[in-house]
Structures are given as C-alpha cells and as structure tokens.
Length: 216
Image (cartoon, rainbow, N blue to C red; front, side, top):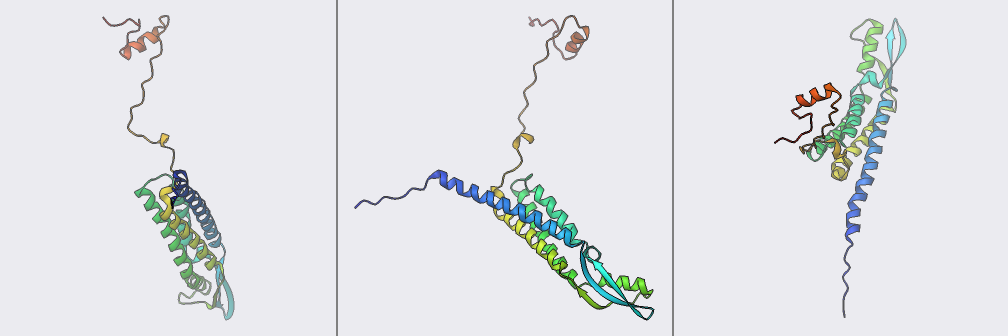
C-alpha cells in the first residue's frame, strides 16, 4: 500500500509570517495610539478630592491627574514617538525602540496606580489655602481616572510586547531614502553653445573642451 506524503506549499509557508506581521502591526498601532490617547486624556481629568480646614470651616479641594503626577503624560508622549520610530530602524535599533515602548507602558501603569493614592497635591493646596505649611487634607478620595490611565498604559505595554515579538516582520522605510555607498551616476555635461561666451567659460572651468573636439 502506497502512502502519499503531503508536501506543504512554499507559498503558504511564506504567507504565514507575512500574515502574522500584518496582524501584529495593526494591533500594535491600534493599542499604542489608543493607549497613549487614553492616558493623555485621563491626566486632564479629576483624580482626587479632599477637604481642608480653613478659618474653622471645611474647604473642598480637587486635583487633576497632571497636578498629581506628570509621569503618565510624559511616558504616553514617549510611547507615541517610539511607535513612529520603530519603522525607521532595523534589527538592534528596532529591538531597543520596542523595549522603550514596552517600558513606557509599564511605567505608565505604575505611575497611575501610585498616583491614585497620592494626596501630596491636595496637601500642598491645603497648605496654601490655610497658610499653614503642615496642613493636610481630610476625607481624601480618588476617582476612577487613575485606573483609566493605568488601562491606557497597559495598552501601550501590549503594543511594546507585540513589537518585541513580531517587529522583525514589520516593514521599514523605503531603502531609496538610505545611502548604500553606491556612487551615483555622473550627469552628462550640457552641450556648449558657441554663441554664448559664458557657457564656454563654464566648460573651461570644468576642464572640458568647449569646442567638443577629441583630444589628440
């Protein structure tokens, strides 16, 4: 009895990595851009609130994410830059940029979670409002926005991990914009018009014979 061994088609084998590269590229772009946008939006929202005692009365205080910490916004901008730069580099450079993208996401998550319980921005407001440098807020609470910023950081982290795993399959900038050391072809000199003396002088400056005669 004869057995027939199935031979994989070379075209299907080549198409598999290409398909994985396209899908991972689309997901990385989506996660990176969306995560950065969510993080930047979250830092402009209300993160925490509290109460300070001023002149014997309670005075409400609030703080936005940018008042609490500037790290998530800075890392989100860095992530956007890394997301663009990953297409301009190759091999080791692409790995380094992908690692930066992943670290930006991890740092955003950590900074947002720490900021959720950070009341220093409100304490500073309480000190200014009461005139007492040791004044602190009471009834401290936080909103859900720090966790939204952390979710944005998680998306950036996913984009970085995808870049680390599949970045070698992604396209790069066109090679025609890069110098490969190949000498460029020299342009042929323009024909000299004998009726234009300036053309003849320019030809002499270039070391050419303006008469067009072959050297003996």
